[in-house]
Image 1 (cartoon, rainbow, N blue to C red):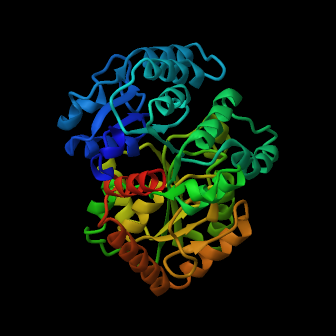
Image 2 (cartoon, rainbow, N blue to C red; image 1 turned 180 degrees about the vertical axis):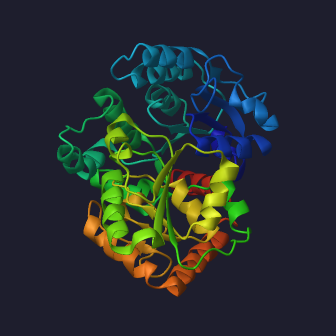
Length: 398
């Protein structure tokens, strides 16, 4: 029966919980293609017995598959400070998903939740998609071990079992989705056949708002730097603060830095002694975040390991000049619509910021080019991109 189903109509079974999967779920449900979505009670893992997030999406309200047990187990593990706490939520979800076998043509699995269901689905003739949203463990170790060592720490995965399972899912699948070229390269590094890797870039709903918004006129004598994301070792926070401290000493009050995002414990030491002109705002509502993106000049994101940063995409959409690393998974082309520096190189970051500080016209030109790229890319939404990738995988395995 499945062979007679057209690719564009093939019913989909999804397992996972990240924001991009929720966007895709709503798209597929709207087109009557989503037969089941196995996920946590709340896809974002917040709350405890709060209503499921899918209730806010009318097309998802009747799609079966939300599970309360993984949420409860994960919250208990967090409260009790258990090691490898992801195991207590991720494994129950994978077991619960395996109990059902919907009439689908495609199984789209994300995270560490899908391997048991993938094996059963293959026996029922389904095409298997593994959605890899970030770098696999061997690549992350290569990218992060030296920086952790600099802090006197040893880098390790939250769970080696789940890390191995994530690799096994990618190797088992008929098609592997990657959000960026850098993740696609990492998959190849881990032995995934390049012919099975499909680039499906992330999308952000905020981008479509920012790309049309007007940027306010600011004091031309001040360069405003902005960072948005988790404040952590992996995001390169040490490099950023070291670079800003040196720049503030050289340039004085003509340069400022806003840090927006929740902080990991490993970063508290840096946040307790920020240089003058640097303000940590903590997490911020989306409307307030949009104000910063539209009013600050240069978005700095020296991440050491990333799948594809939505914050970078949003900064580009807002018209910021962006400085980031090749490992951040962004669509930045060096000197064309932003600047790229090597990870962990604070001197290169200082040079890049200082060069833009001295050339306001260059800041504006890079921001316009970045905004134009996002305006072009958002003409195809994430759901449509994923469906196009489904067709390529199904055609290859017809």
